[in-house]
Image 1 (cartoon, helix red, strand yellow):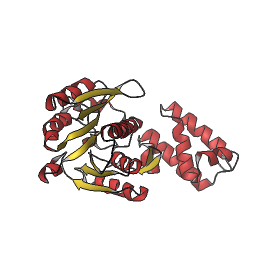
Image 2 (cartoon, rainbow, N blue to C red):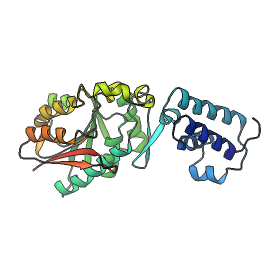
Image 3 (cartoon, one colour):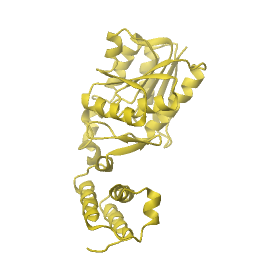
Length: 288
């Protein structure tokens, strides 16, 4: 066990993860975290010996990931989103790469729909870690971003991320659009990645997701569309005449969600957009 070098430890962990059906790259992520090195530094030091106590704590995390299915993001405490590190824990959904595409889509559409780009009110509903809200605020400083979540713990994580990354975001606690409706507030843009997994499918998710990520952030009612139905009812009460709605949806839900938006806003231009893997993943409604 003594005097192992980084290369040997990394090689062992990668093959151990692979044997147990986990991603090999987790070994690199965990080792960088435990050695406090960037990936480039790690690769430059593969022949360096590894300290015994660091090796032990690294091994403990590899075992937690394999046997207890603890997500690697929970072990290292963050996930990168749009090039920035976001703190995550068991109270928030771990941000996914598909959601980066939603953010990109929102930024592009805002620049077309509001060319003067002046002081737009944008709301991120069900903000979780704050990834969408914080990224929008940092990528386009002209936006006035508000983030809503029903979970106090999630809002705590989101506020921490906003502060650490230097984003100006206002936080409201409440159920979907209720805080805006109660305050009689109208906004230009509503973006949301709501829970959209049908309840019956939760059991089929990998234990990394179903045992460690918040159920309330995953389950979208019996058919996965419960939150979109509520949005269709509540959106007309909060949108200005010229407005943008942007949703992330589960693969195969695009047309159903588009139909709900068309019903709520007959004159709107509604489009279903596909993600990098060719799955229907975003639905946009433009009112003008």
